[in-house]
Image (tube, rainbow, N blue to C red; front, side, top):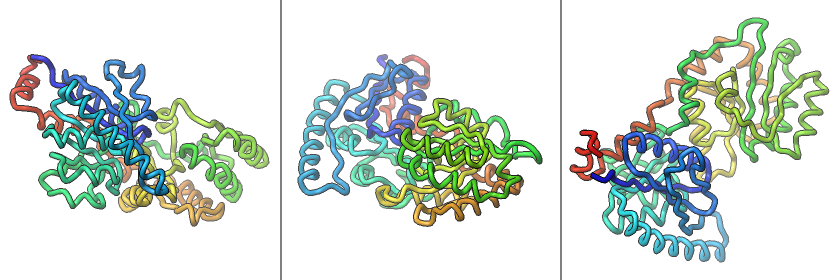
Length: 376
């Protein structure tokens, strides 16, 4: 029997593509064929999963756009819908899985129009607009948080909390227990936040560090992401404090940095929260203030309410406010350890397998039986 084909559809940003890649790995391991539909921004999974073919579909966002841009992007979504109908006829997928973002709308809408079972995955604590549009006709809705705004519009028997899949090298961090900093040892602070986070952190973090008690400041080992144009200013600020800091626009070894970190300063995107909870690492979270529907604030509150971190809205971000949180967190190692344990308690390391189980459940009975019997 030819293995069933699963079509994944995701927006081009990492927050959508990372969980799609994790599911693709899980499905391929079970003997299924996997394709990906995305827009021009989505680079696919590249050399990591060359067996997953990428199909480009026209799309465009409409939230927060002017009238002309909205009309143009509605037209692109219409074009993408027609392209998706052709793609579905050619691929004949057994299930279509959407990960949000406007590029997921045309393939999922075409699948629903043709009675192909669809599964949606929501990464954030506020359901995105694409998923809200598609949810009424989706067979199943997979959630990353126990409480997700707008999700109750979908009947409870069609909702499942799977968690948000992360890369295996992130999940593996949880195998080693969190080691709180001991007296006299270095305290490792990792600051990351993408280009938008790096700009505000590039100024605020050095100024906050300058306000810390000198004994604590001398113990810090800081690795910080900073935009290329901000590197010189941040480096100068740290040099004035007689501190040597690793400053880079991008860290290639994020899993290793995360493993070593005692505390992080981050944004609160879905992928960041998934990695923090899978690894079990505490963080001071500064949500992106202009995220759609303020979903980063909702993400951060979910972690803070469990005791897994500290929330500092950007509107309240000042060197003194950040220094106060850092001082309290870093001066008491037991508090860091408790926050790490709380973060880890929310992590679902098997999220990709849980999601793959939902896909299998939507397959036709004969295909499901063949996979379970190992005859694919």
